[in-house]
Length: 294
Image (cartoon, rainbow, N blue to C red; front, side):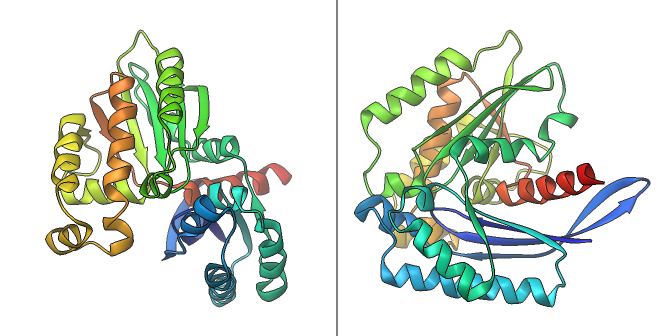
């Protein structure tokens, strides 16, 4: 069985295609393709309130490509979800109708809470050491989702309108930060030591650059060091020194700022980066629903 997930975020759109094979009565998810297109919808939406004509065309063209790829791979089931930017866009529903007509892809706009719940679909909690509590931090272009696990159960989830594209455009206020800090101080509390689990393209990139072995954590001290280094460089210098694309180089420092703040306010000093995403959660969500129907 082949399953596809489309995640249309504020910074990029991703198509993930997985093949599911049953191995010892357990599903094994094999990645066949992952395509990322930097649409940067948040650049329009968070400044002018809607998706402009140029990016509107990019969305439609991208979804045509995604549709063709799904046909080539003979995908059996898919789900397409849009998050913060499309939620806030005045013309979001209009563009969704155009996408459906042009490509046959039906896009759902999901809430911040549902976005956080999709993270849970990754079954992150199942393999965790019960001696610890865990804060899952998913940083996107338009929002940051926090999901807190204790004793293998989700006890708190919340979406905040603090994201890398919003920060890039100076659209996050002191009050936005204060709200996040207050929520963390009130809800991310445990008698057990708390570890962080990070997701999103930016933390994945920092993890790769750190040469940390898979399964090992990065320290908050390391994130603060990288943040300081990046903050002192121009976007061009970051691109040259670290071989980064422009659409990564300009937002990476803002992502690090979010991770550093969240971890500091939660008294967390280590973060694991398992390289899972909303798209992975969507794949799991589709598979779970198909099994439930059976």
